[in-house]
Image 1 (cartoon, one colour):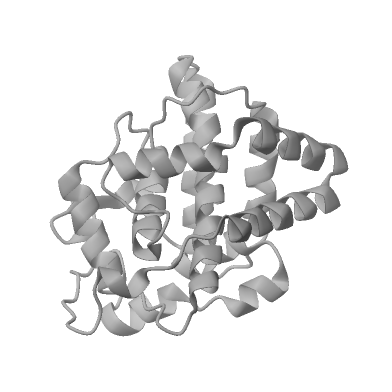
Image 2 (image 1 turned 180 degrees about the horizontal axis):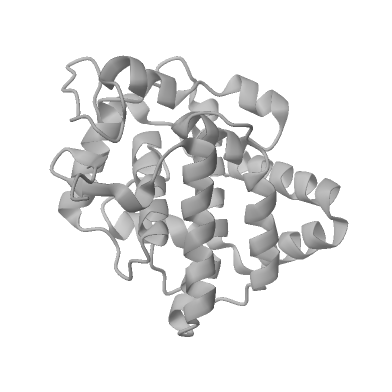
Length: 250
């Protein structure tokens, strides 16, 4: 998602961060692996329910089906109580894991997050787009998928209100977090937000400096990650009135 945040991010730090995140998945399906990328630790991955398995069982292939209307879930079923301590816990786990992989990169990432505090900026941006990412997991998941789709397709603009609403309805009709408490929902949301930040910041830096090669590399990184690890071709996926669907134009 496009931001106007003042950035002093070191691009290589974020590139390494995303690359390390990408190595956390092991041939799983689309959203199973998508979420696994965010969880960092094995025990965390085990705790997170597979949204993709839910999606498949209810709809079939997520890229080819229309949103299933459900009377059992609505936006309020995805809420959590905002707790800044949870966000800090997630950030600390990300940094600790990064330091285990590469001590210098981990320290640089810690300094960058402390200096720029991008999480708050992304919350504000999503609020302007009509998404309550501070208190609703469905809105976070919606923003995450739209943001990654935007990067993979090298889009300049943020999604439209119609696109946001269509994907939000699709998420509500597909994902089920009723078994998770407030902390667990926010924890999952925070991992998604940080992964979006790590993918989007380098992309925005390349876009705003007219770095065509960097822009392509940033886009390809997200595209290949979703295709190879998640079995989802974001470049052959379109957003219509029913949310994401496979592009049959070929």
